Length: 187
Image 1 (tube, rainbow, N blue to C red):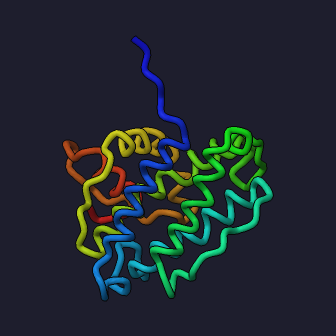
Image 2: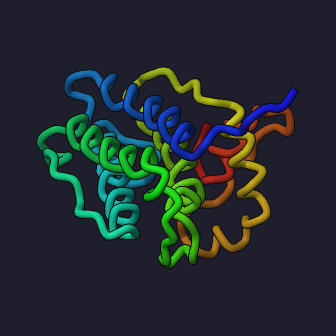
């Protein structure tokens, strides 16, 4: 029996749906609630994802940025526009396998998304859930894979300023908790 690993497009869809459920589930009046990222509110979590992902991914393959509402006016609409644009890239095999050259290095678009975006969706879904009182349960298998891939880069990532100090957690904590703690969050 053989098992097939999910494609980047399938993983994106799964993680983007989880993030989108949190975006759509933000209760009225909670967009300005503090988020786990210092100095951010819930709306800023969506702004972060909506601003950097389309710019990097569409720019890497010479596509225009999607049109959509601003995060200030309609965070959910802004997320849906970004998600639709990125999903369309990943669902087109010719585009998904197109070589890119970015600050992250030379790789196909789908490799770029897998390396830079998938973990961001998972962690920021948690941030948004925590900020707005939603369910914080996320995909443990994805968290385990991200944790295994990121731990060897601990010193380099800490030095980059992308993550705060690692938060101590019990040795028997689940991998999502360990991943969140790795990124400086208080799970």
